[in-house]
Length: 523
Ligand code: C2E
Ligand code: MG
Ligand code: MG
Image (cartoon, rainbow, N blue to C red; front, side, top):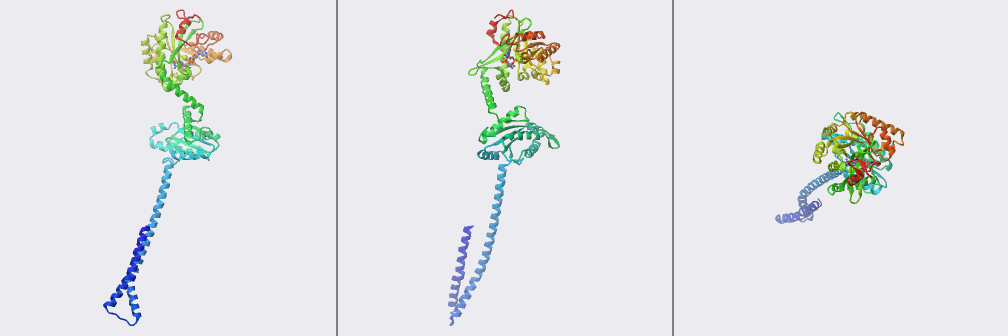
């Protein structure tokens, strides 16, 4: 634009000089020469000069004025256009900026913006609460109702979140069905906000004339206790959210470093447990179950032990849950069942009436192949089915038809079933009458308290009576004192197990502690 104006200026100067000075001078000279004009009066020369000059300069000026008008007009036009482009560019930039910072579906600030805001806040503020929210059942809504309804649902959720959170807090869409709320209110109020959100979610969301319910799991982290930078704070809020999920959802959890350490310990245990089987770190101890009236051995309960190379003996209470969570329990359970059947089968050469009880975890029990697998083990080890007792817990016999099928299949093989730790789980007494259970194992907590706490004795008596009426045999767990054993026998309990008789022992020690032929203790 600058260059064009400059060139135009030079052109105009050139035209003016040519038409106003040079051409009139040449024309005047030529006229005088051609017509041999000679004037006495100088005025005539001047008039001729001026006339010639006017003759040549007038069209130039007209041309120049028009050109100038045109240029001015186009310049003006160009300027307006430039301004418009500028405005459009500014608008596009604003739009781009908005899109970069906001979620297309909900209009909420997005993950990118969250990090920028969080970075700024962590640098400037001394307190901040981060609430990480994940919907509990969004996947099933998406799967059953389709993605469009899923989108509508997310939109409604975002609107409800906006309406629910208090002033001083803002909500971001982290992605999918995850939202993050930053609260600048005092940190102590974060749980209140979380509870408020959970309450707000109790109302349904209406999508395409259908009322949908959802709940949320919320994890909370605090600046400065749970981190000083955005990445750590978000990660910790996310971890806390997973804890809330593990609790079944529809709840909130504040981040806890000690819970994380526990989790890490479990993860490390899980890694080590994977090797444990191959490197022979697992072993079995056997705890005798005795006849309370005669003191004779009835059976052994196989209890798995883990000799960890660095941690020493890890109790099953610590590693069985880890094994269950990771699925390793299936391999461990297989190994325990087979090894224990082999061992007790060996002892059958001294007494072929010895029973064997093996604990079964819910995960093994839910495996449809479990009964077939137990049958195979019995065949391989030649262990008599009627001497094998599988110990299950109360929760395993709850309502699902699959459990009932497994129980019946196992029973059809001639194997016995015991309910372990009876009285501590969620017993469904109505089920008890229908299931073919052979033994009830009265939990140690009843045995422990029945001497000191009168009502406990009545409860134990009731359990024993109920079991006997249902044709079940009773085994009391955790007997440590003679008085407990005596009282239990008086109440009608036939069998008992506990430190009073013997702690769980390795096979070699069982062999020297008991005379397996007479079924009596030798030392
Ligand atoms: P459980 O099946 O109820 O086993 C009884 C537990 O009580 C054993 O703990 C035993 O050592 C302990 N105990 C026995 N008598 C007494 C007593 O008089 N006083 C006290 N204080 N404790 C006594 P342990 O061996 O630590 O096993 C804990 C639990 O781990 C078992 O409870 C069982 O549920 C599980 N478990 C053990 N081995 C296996 C296994 O091979 N598979 C599965 N799935 N679970 C197992
Ligand atoms: Mg048991
Ligand atoms: Mg038990």
